[in-house]
Image (tube, rainbow, N blue to C red; front, side, top):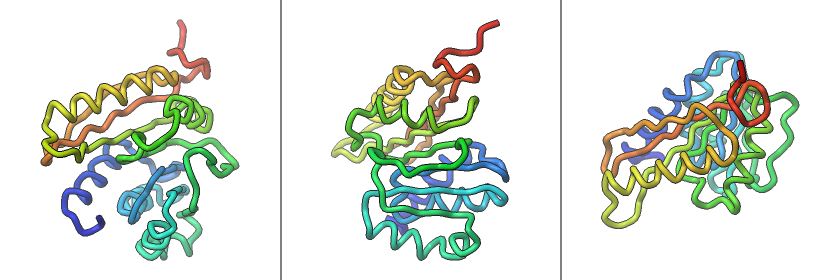
Length: 188
């Protein structure tokens, strides 16, 4: 997975859209071989990057890829599931999930839990590159709409979708945590 050019492009693009700042605290769910973790660590130079993955093999691979940042205590990887998130001492600034939401049980409830972990105005990016046989731009558009609907149902706002023209295309759906904490945009 780490050697496929499209995976590198997809992860780098998604991280760039998340607009991670140097002091951010970021969580990636389902980090695989750790490509986006490495990109996030390059951006959150004074912050912390957390990652969970349900595969011990991926935790090991990502650990090797990000060994220096782990030794510097800037990257923290855990063998865990989105069902049982580890504890974070402070609110997160951003969350990233690439090609993993489709495997989550009750994704709306998981997204609500993630929203609770985000600071007000925190950001989330959900990425989907459909890999089903015959996937097209229309397949990606449907996947993006599904992610938008899930985020809206979970109370996120400012939802927007971006597309990266790969084969098949990649959708990144970005959203924000409301600043009033209610699941609704700020009221005047």
